[in-house]
Length: 376
Image 1 (cartoon, rainbow, N blue to C red):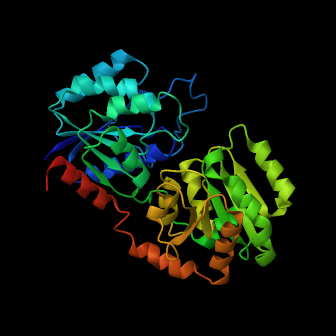
Image 2: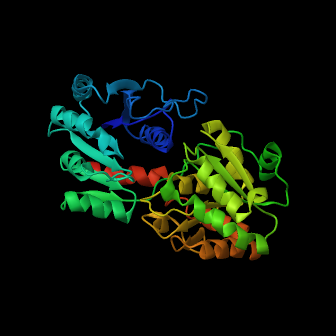
């Protein structure tokens, strides 16, 4: 049996990439001798002041994880790579999403050497929030990779711009189906949230950042309300320090009675009730490569509205598993929402999501990794 070492954040680290890494480990370990190597320290507190860990739910916990890597300590990076080299892996998979990790991964690549095959799983080739040195740092690390997996056409183009002959596979993010912890029904979820059965619930979920376009769905609400007076927008996630500016937009639009806010970090065990209670998940992003929110929604068989940016249109079958609308367009956001409810599309879209299950499966991801390893 071939050996794989998987490097990245995993429980108790918070966030979508941590969830992704945990699910990937569980899938790979069915077919390979897989070792999980994570961080003794992911980010220094001076760069990331919020709590980075959540011990409240062990669903994503990987037993025997090696928390070896202090990303800011070069001696730790070197010693971690030496330990990995002693494991004699056939493949090392790095989770890549931000150039912050470039010095650490660059050192590890050099210690691992050319004989050990290195695969970079690119969540973002370049960061969402660009800075002057990001291209240099990304190229420094990725040019030494042997093979790659990308999750959007945009990331593939970015990868080829710094490594034109890269060996890669492009695929969608697999479904995040591990949040079904209580097997809640829609009725039960709404009872927990004290939501009425008659409400038509839109869900905006995740960290609130400017590029995610929350303001656009808020501004679309007046038009939606005219046709669907029972509509409700749930905003669920951490605003950081910008909640006041969104509250200002809500008040200016006169839609406060139609908005329910659940601010702050949402623990894993709390995710299910929000998705199960909702009818439609909205991602009005202004820019994106891809988003795990779509895969989380599909894991609950919930349709989505996404904007035509980055890799989002690549994962949504327009008119079947959701709608793709133009970016920065409140009128089209409103029209798609109204159409979904007026045409009673919930059951039809749910069936289409089920039909796409293999496309979003971890088994399909494993097959691509097998191909890149040269197993097939």
